[in-house]
Length: 133
Image 1: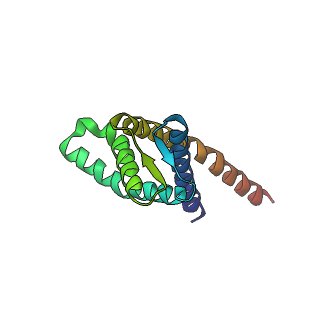
Image 2: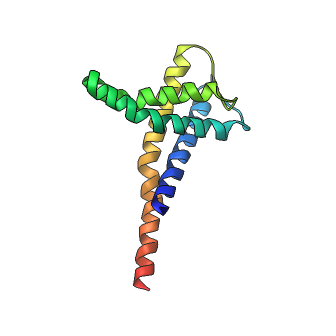
Image 3: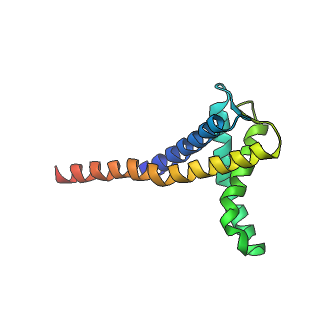
């Protein structure tokens, strides 16, 4: 249960980091302080729900595009998060949407790889220390 909570926190944290970095790097991506948490939660929920569905449909109908599943689900997460609440807005046409999708996808992918190594390694070290005592 603890590992599930840690992984959920990492997922939320990596999404928050991705949205924040996109807002720093892309002029047309705006985050509001009050709605930031809602935008992160909505983005994560969309990712969590739609990614398996998109992967299944891609495997069934367009096997060559499996590598793009993360990008499609990141775009849909951004789109729905921007429609719900005022935490995230992306203006300026197609280019900011494409760039935001790429940045959020890349940052969340890297954070999803690095953060578990940090947090779960500490958890394993704590268990080893408790077992030795």
